[in-house]
Image (cartoon, rainbow, N blue to C red; front, top):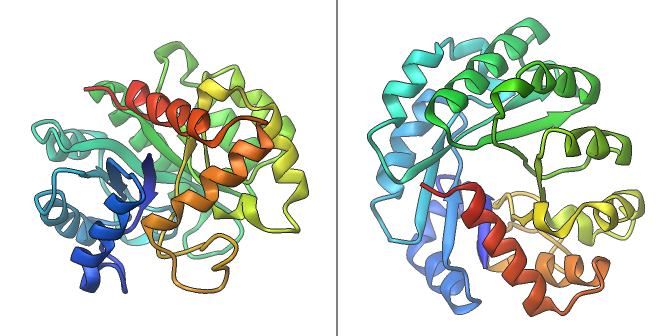
Length: 253
């Protein structure tokens, strides 16, 4: 299994890293992708990827942080290009649910990240909330450059997913698919092709059932894999094999 999106630099994971990694390996996790959300955060990511062979990282400015992290695509490329353990750009995108950063700053930052991912030819890790039309329009405007798109913690509509199929996007399922009230999202994941699916914890956030409301950790990925296998009507081992192969294909160096 591979946890395609976690935040190992956050509490309580960072202060219990050895035990978190031990439990991750015990459930069969072979890779963890720990995600950057700000410039300050990236220094922590660089240290984390050296801690264990299974830890990989990304570089990105979260939409909530764009007001205080003004960067260029050239800056991102220089930060990433010589580090083989930094394998993705993000998380970036648009979040119009909160007003932590204004829309223009978010859009500008999103485009900068897209251009850097295209130049580096590595995946773009996209956060989208209450911004489906704008997210798709921007991604689609780069279609000719064939960006490698991963929709992190996908909670969008079926229509949004179908539009993204045209961009060969990948979709990552989080613990939200295990929630009883997530029936619409569960139905959307049923129609996403198996070769475009990944799994993630987004830990320490969004713990899956039966740990909802508690601090999440990578080892809880097993509950997400189990639920997704049920939705796809597949044996769990087959689902895990597919999502692992999909990650390795998308993030191949």
